[in-house]
Image (cartoon, rainbow, N blue to C red; front, top):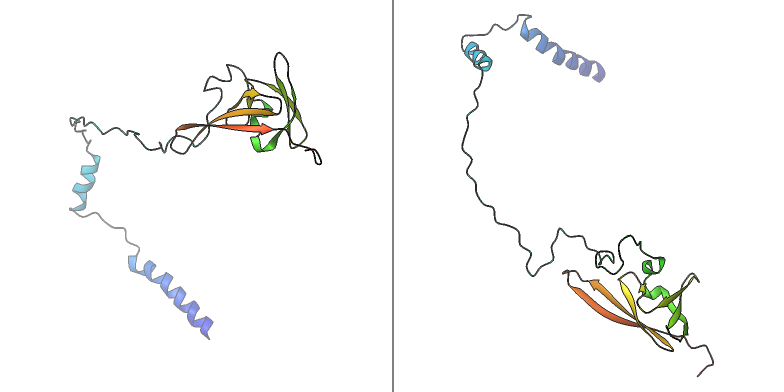
Length: 173
């Protein structure tokens, strides 16, 4: 019973708009004709003189520029790497992943660094080490000093020196 009532109600709702139009086409009245004529006329553009107003320039003083990427210093931009050189595998590692295995003293001091995967690297003074543009500054008989340059969130360049020391074996005093 309810289905029949709902279906009749839907049929009546769709039939009412069709019966209201009466099948006659609307004839434009006199008030509507000038509106159509206005649309047909060509509209001439109005040229206005634009006043130049100077907008205030955005100045970054004492705050970090929000439009600059938050990243460290690129060694190629800083002039440390040189033109055409790519980033070495030793530069991709952090200093927490590297430890000192051995030192060779001579005319030019050298050190053997090893990463956590067991890969060894021979470095001399001036070698780039670590992801924050670390550079080996001094090699002694049991330590290697690495100076790192990094940017903080304000864009200031800070420097810290990290010393990698030889590990003492168990039982050795």
